[in-house]
Amino acid sequence: MDSNHEAAERSSEKGWRSRKRLLILLALFLVCAGGAWYALAGNDQPVALRTVPVARGELLEAISATGTVEPEEVVDVGAQVAGQILAFGRDADGKQVDYGSTVRQGTVLARIDDSLYVADEALARARVQASQAALRRAQADLAQLKAKLHQAERDWQRARKLGPSEALSQASYDSYQSAFESAQANLAVGEAAIVQARAEVGQAEAQLKRAMRSLSYCTISSPVEGVIIDRRVNIGQTVVASLNAPSLFLIAKDLRRMQVWVAVNEADIGRIRPGQPVSFTVDAFPGETFSGQVGKVRLNASMTQNVVTYTVEIVTDNSNGRLLPYLSANVQFEVQRLKNALLVPNAALRWQPPQGLAVAEPEQGPRAAARKRGPRAGPAAEKEAANLGVVWVPDGEAARPLRVITLASDGTNTAVRSRELTADMRVVIGVEEAGSRRDATSSPFAPPFPGRNRNRQR
Image (cartoon, rainbow, N blue to C red; front, top):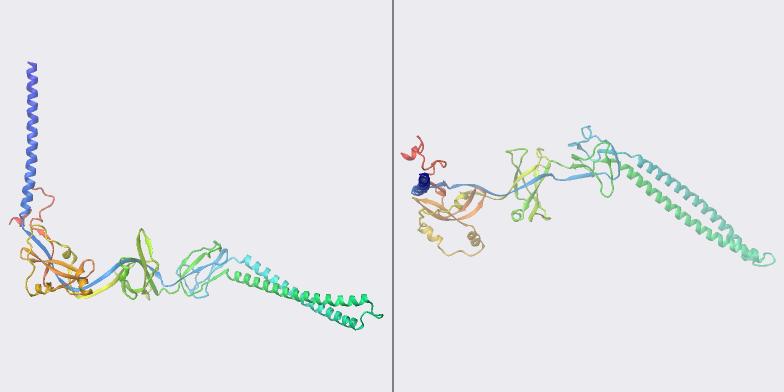
């Protein structure tokens, strides 16, 4: 009995598993069938073309780049001597020199401790006085040597007249000759001493001038008239002038004229030229556009991560003083400006008809015949061939292609030229299925809620 009962239970369990597998397979079949029905039902829905009208207006083709607002001319004022900053000078308003101070040429900017340099000047001045005294002594000695030479010369002349005789012994004769020759040599030594003394005076005076110049460097003055845009030292700070002069102040000569330094990619630099109009904006003044023109293109290109860029200088007027140094600028270089041009969206040039959409044949007639004429030769024809494009216009429930020549683009719209396209026509930018208004999150198996797709059911 027990074995029969166990066999019955195992048989019942196997039957339940079989029915369970059958129910799962049936559910999967229903899901797949419903999805296929939904897809087929959607494909049967009519296709509507999304179109926009062709506009006629002005188009600006521009190159976008970013840059930095820079003063037109900046002077970096440094220190030529080492020492401690004792004090700052006064600006044109009588205030202590600081950021934004207006200074004139010769205005004292800072003073460096000059104790050592005053001592060096005093030492150099004493050396000048000592060398001058040595020169005067050498001149006096030279005068004595000249007198001795004159006396020795007269004695030697008398001795030569008498010669060795009973009146003048041979020893005395030789003594007068030796005295004369020694006086001549001493005179030459005296003259050399004069030359040496004068050289020492010149050396001492040069050292004095150097000491005085070093002392003057302790007073830092403005070499130009302008505005201080950076102060890089504080009172009490020690500056050390070695191989490079330390920078103390940065002065902009004239903030009424500014420049914008822009890094332009090598792919666009060929369309940049001096005098080209430029417009730019800065984040400090949103909604305000500033204008300028290209000043020069620097030829020292830089490479960063295999990207070559050139620095372009843009000159702009800043008479109102609104532009501040080192603001970030979003720049638009005006490549060309077209007026009264046919404008189509860029999406119309990219659109291609999907499968299942009826495509109409191109228009036949005089215009089409004119398009089929032989191609013109020359650079203009080659340029037009490179700029050919196609837009699609609605033709009943189908779409018909029209060939156009693209002239310029601003990133959103493109100016085109065509014998067939006119401003009263519409171009296709996409398709819109009639059932696309259905809620994307709804399930095809869920019952419709009141009010949903009410317009489609009417």
